[in-house]
Image (cartoon, rainbow, N blue to C red; front, side):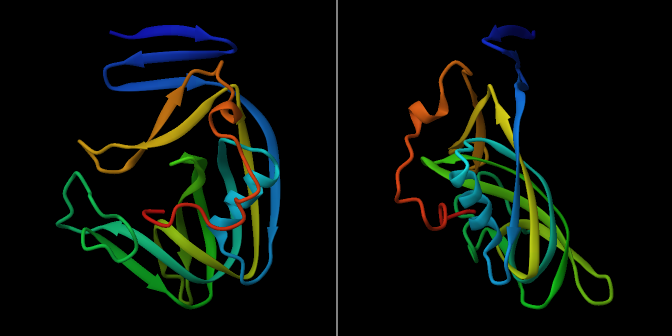
Length: 198
């Protein structure tokens, strides 16, 4: 059975398998990244700089010199208890060579009170071979061009699902609550987001 509730300017739809919420597009943030910049850190910093609490990654192109990727192993089972770089339960691949950024998709929201960029990506190397996965971190080689779509009238953050997946899952909250009320910002956010399980 599906239930529908209107909250402010947003509609909430709940059924046993999913919850959805409709909000509105906010600003588009354009970001130019210099060589040596850490991609996921820069996405988080751009959101902090512009007061963005929830965003969708529209597009990222450019090149990288190094990337740390995560994929599940053939023997990985749920719940995953350790998903950080080089954890036994997951496969960490480190690629250290110039590669084209073919695609990055993902989102930015709060995890443990900090802005966190959740990115999955595809990269191509010499010969056209393509590698991909969940991005722990990636270093820009020649340039990076990032476009972010702010989400308005909707508040999303992540909470660890200890029982089923072990992973930080998105939580859709009441749109009447302003995200800055729940997560006040301060001047200490000048470095990377959560180090465990990017």
